[in-house]
Amino acid sequence: MKIYQGILIALLFSLLYSSTVSATHRDSPPPERLPITQLHSGSNAIFFDQVNFDLVIGPITNSDWGQFRVKPAKLTDRGKPLGTGYINVFTYPENRGGEAVWAISNLFVSAPTDSNSNNHRKTVTIKHADNRQLAQYERRRQPNTPDSAPEMAVYFDLRPGEDGQGSLRRIRATVLFSPQPLPTIEDVAQIAKRFSPRTFRVNPIVVNAEGAGHVDGRISPASSTIPNSLSLGRPPQPITPAPGLPDDLLFPIQVIQADQPNLDAGRNQCVPMAHANALQYLEDRYDNLPLAWRFPQLHIRGIGKVTSAGDVLIWEPVPENSLVANIDSYGRRAGVLDLDTGSYTTFCGLIRGVFGYLADPVSGTFDTTEFRHQGSDSTTLGSGADCDNGTVIMDGITSQREGLNPTWEWMFNELVQGRAVTILFSWYDVDGDWTGGHSVRVYGAAKLDNRHYIYTLDDGSQGDNFSNLTSPRTQQWEVADTGQPGLDGVPDGRLNMNGMSWEIDFALSYEAKPTLLIP
Image (cartoon, rainbow, N blue to C red):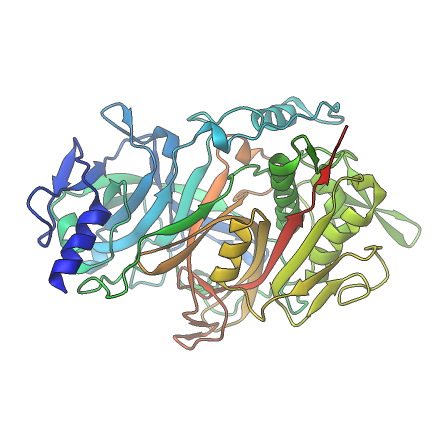
């Protein structure tokens, strides 16, 4: 078995040699080198954050939640781009006596290429758009640059083993880049100890990404009765390395779609924005002659603004040529007056928003879409089925359930077939009480080191701020059924995110059906 493990290690670690540092695995043949590059403090490519949450349930300041961010386009070694690879982070918490913990494992970073740009060719005039809105729309038509390429982010625990709050401004860490994922085994952890840790600055950052009602119909998260530090559960915990390679070690498998578009969202507007990002991705991919699949609206910021005529509430898209504004108006969120106001979208609002928009002639004639889903108690959602209360015409559009709970395998297969996927996930406090939810587009999925991952995109700082103009956020999540809210280690059939009390409740697949244009 040792011989086979040595061969696998050699294949995983590649024949490449890093000009910065290298290490040899004890089971590898003498010429085989593990190419590892240590990333240093002061870099303009990697950042450590302490998250301050600004949520409906209330603010959580100076939390235990850390966020590690990477600008892949700026990752270099002696002036040369490092390219696509994986980052592992080891931190040295003070409460652990200076011992290293494996805080982040195999964070995938993709070197930006022209294939990530979106060659959107619409020439319709953008009405009611200011210069920054126009700049954001035009930027999607150009290749990503080091300053505009998406950031990859992942949460981790700043103070593992402690529950509390308090400002943290410095962190000691070893940050390692490798062209291949590293097995999470003790031998690799020992290799990491050969590098001297560096001191990194920790930046305070505000995250307010939310807005998805629970799949059971709840839309008003209740403030937790436990300390604020635990109202979202605990942050992702450090990795416990295995003593050796598993017998069923597999090579990585992965599907990655374009990580754009990723537009700025209004406050609590995650659901309509996830829909809009998904639909615009499909248009960018499939609206190419001789195929046509498109919308007359543009992918620019907007809201479904609430007005009234007497006692009757009316939702109207502002501006009227905004894709997300039209979807938002059909989702009928309460209290939407501008980009900084508005409530959660209900679960049925999630369905009625996108189905109602696609059924409306305003969406055009080249937008035929088929839906399927996993999660919820509804085998059929949409027109003439669950969530059809007669307030929104959905004109025969439905989604059929293909699983009681979302699974990684289903999302992976949908992405492989070129479909767009969005998810709705919920977070709970340590007692198991629901404290909020969010919706995002899933643009990738991977299996490596016998772990399952998904990659998502969203706006981490919602509101009228153009935060995604220069730093659009993408995130990596390990998904597995590690327990149920309030009962860690007791599976309930739902995928947890990074081992936390955050669960994926619902996944929706969008399949574009382009029209063949024959002259």
